[in-house]
Image 1 (tube, rainbow, N blue to C red):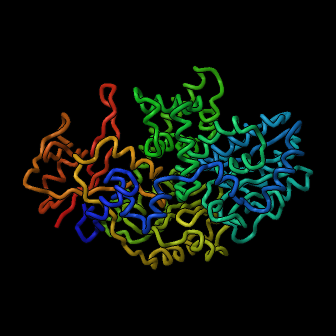
Image 2 (cartoon, rainbow, N blue to C red):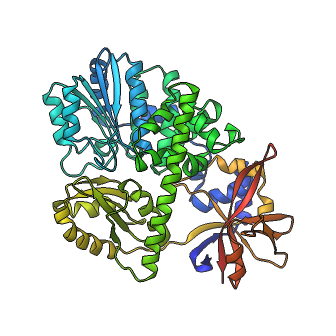
Image 3 (spheres, rainbow, N blue to C red):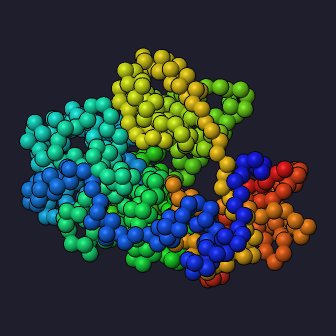
Length: 552
């Protein structure tokens, strides 16, 4: 629920109609463009994503890219290769690509390892490195971590191993000093700095001609999946990568992705795959493996290896892990919110019974719901591991950097970071971090919405709006506003009366789980909604889903 003061309402007019005529697009697409762009050149950039191949030719990943190519050609063919990854979707996706690149480059053997999030935590650990060295591997490929793992990398190099690292995490403080560390955060261009680790690895492989383009094209699906999962800023390159990867998923999805999508979205055609279905259905399942158990089952699914029965068992295991993750998360969120309602003021929360693996998702949810920073922590191994989420305008990495003397390890992105700390230092860290979080000044920015009646949003017009996508961080899915008028009536929806149809004219908004709230809300002035494609009896049509009630 929100008031008019919370909204920045764009009202289409003659300017919008003139823009639609000039760009030869629908008034709906023109309204979306005009609401978020300043000039006609920006309009055209949004409407026409630059050619991916040209962007890849111009991309600069950093000086290490060429050195990494030379090392790859020497250190992978005919060698025993060990791939070390991470447990989230970006880590799993980059692990799968690294494995496939090594196998198809002629490695004598290629195996992988992803640490246990609960007992080991993030990064390349010296204890694991000792086992890898003892097993006689000649080449180490590290994906989605490694930039700050100085000790473990030095151990590998001292043992005579060739090391390649593909990462995208912040590089402040002690970092690995090798020529084959491909991390655009060091010296890449602006578009390269927006890439997730999977996209860094895929773009590097494409530029370096590691495999024929036809083979690399199929791996682009994983780069798109990871870009959506890591909420990377959707500048021109990430939009192109995600758009082309989703197109490939629709046309010829990877075997494991296809089986997972069929289980999650039965009876839906591949043509309905989009960034929303990935973020709301596919990604939580894949992430659940590393959060609740270990990430290997997610690797099995994305690799698509094994018989049909074996692959289906892996998919079923993912679905079960996601149900467990969802139930545990809901219980913890309910408990935390109950404490906040009763006056709990701390934004740094610790509980000895919380599973470490699911805390990042809960912290993100709390940060979003309350629009303030939260850090959640729990015991892990002999120490404490935590996760930090901050609202727009704050910087999680800078906050942890200021507490470096108290932390065993830390790293992450501007909006999300993780850390580990000795139990004896926890009380002081808890006090100092909470003080920092409570002093963050969050400026509430109005939500941008477009005043547009749903009966004017046709399927063809919505298809034009999709050209501005994919939507996500930095390129939000447009939201629409329709005011209450004399025609508005309500009708129950569903057997239990939990949902409501908001009727006016010849169209209806669907307010899922909104019946009770609508009934007890006085002074309703309008609705915020978004269109969503829906399959019914073999036909795809648009639904108009209420996301907010606007009051006076």
